[in-house]
Image (tube, rainbow, N blue to C red; front, side):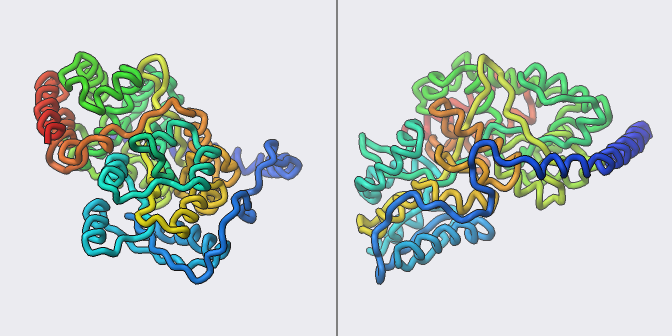
Length: 457
């Protein structure tokens, strides 16, 4: 009953805000009409820039593989069509399925690998290079990478001192999305620090809405929570050591990070549906809890990368209106920037495959997908106005502003048996921790036992 009364008051507040917005809309439109872009950027949807010279490939054919399906495949196809238009080449796209390494391995064994593969894990890219499957970038592709990407991204695409990959599609995994109605009703504000996050979460809980939706059924979301806390709290050096298993998961820095997570996960009313409910919530459903009914959400916030934007739209909420986003708060001295991404590598050392990688390394290719939405580029020369809305522009700006001061998803760097498999390794251990956040040392021992086995093999 109490919660219902709070909801009714919230609906009245939303009606009042809507009336105020309507009354001032004319003035806002007049102001906007008199303003142009202050950075010289092109308008989203404008013609794609031509900044890179590509060879004439008329009559040549090449095949590209990626995990992308649906809308992602459609948007990547637009990029490939522009490449065809500029070069005369014919490009075919073949979905790899989730197991890129298995797909490429079978094609190589059969003597017919695709020309280019878009690989989602840095460890898999380096495995391809180590086996000789991937071919180093030629001079033109390497020059385009050097011109457009920070050294950190260049290093991620390198192996044994040679540049193999082009990080075409990136993810900013250090974001928290919030329901503006829930925040307004609770009087909550965007937090800058972990302590402030806990305070605002408690405000939301006290107002009658659970604070944070956690997609604990999908263990990978829990690894992202841990990585953001650990990077900000322990620092980049420790992060790199743990990612390479040069320090053990029983290290005091891991204990501190788990204890910090327990401040949120272990406090009643802060996790939507409680811990048991979170363990039964898949990632897409966690977004729905926050935005499926924007006026009366089941949760005030949800954590995950920029791809949440697509789930927000699927839930029927308005990005930038019902849903806004803020950077993952600083747990230590600085806010974390954890990234993911898809890297293009040549599996055939042909003129066509190298030309495609040159194109993918240019602002031209990235601009095409950026304008379509659901995409972030680490290319520092893509104009921010190419992104279709303010939230996506802000996310892209944060990624570029990080320069080299970011770290790639730790679990994606680990052996798959530890960092990338359901019901085992890190995924399972963190699910067990969500179930019982008091068992810090027990979870550390579990993590270390699993990691030691995986890194040894």
